[in-house]
Image 1 (cartoon, helix red, strand yellow):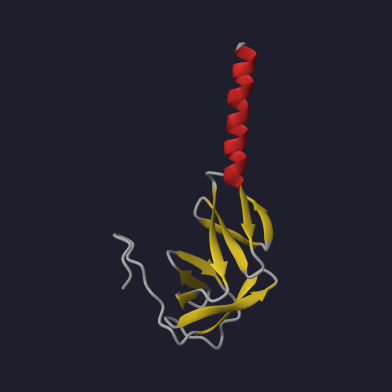
Image 2 (image 1 turned 180 degrees about the vertical axis):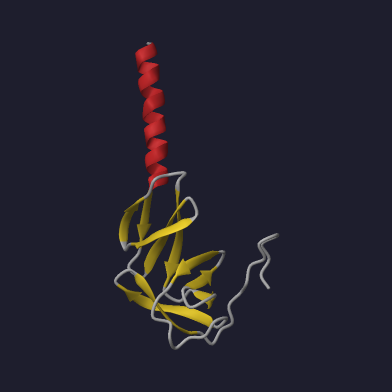
Length: 125
């Protein structure tokens, strides 16, 4: 009886870990994967496996609006992701994801201002 109970508990733990590790990105989406808060890579489209509790993912979609923080980083929501090929854009400018070149986002100037999220309470300003 204890072997059956142990097998049941182990099965539940495996199911919980697997359900937290599987993500699916659509054709017009990519994931920015962070390990313990540091950017690792862009992943997608399709099935993406992550290590629960050590890796976090942030979903990027075509049409997402952000702000170019510097020549190397753009802020989308509450996360900064590394960007490249932004010579025609200036720092502080509202940008939009126009598509993906492989897995990296293609950024263009946005006519819609980006919403900034307050880190203390989460309101948009």
